[in-house]
Length: 107
View 1 (tube, rainbow, N blue to C red):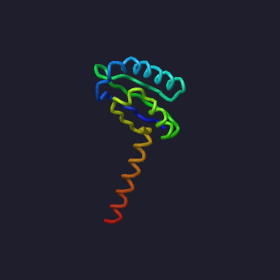
View 2 (spheres, rainbow, N blue to C red):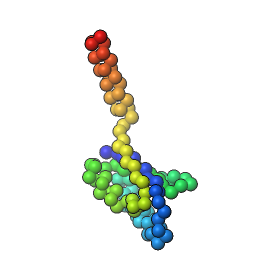
View 3 (cartoon, rainbow, N blue to C red):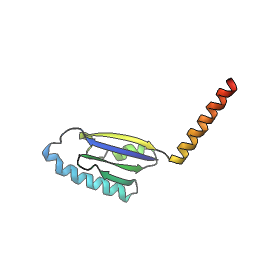
View 4 (cartoon, rainbow, N blue to C red):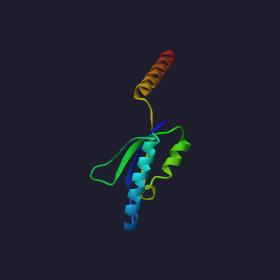
């Protein structure tokens, strides 16, 4: 299961927390890249925030990883489940075809 994670700073971090949080983030990224769970990550240019794609086996595993996210206390975090685009288009097409057939039958 792939999830898009988007984070943006929502409040200033106390100065004494900045360096430990940056170091913690570097460690979090390295660990999750090494174990294959973080398949992509980036920072937003010119602002405090970024995102990534996590590939996990369950919502519980996602939760376990995100509870260790170093900037969670001062960030807005959005999590979006991802699906294969072609499969999603096929499902939408099938659903619309079914609805149109039902409308014509009721017609």
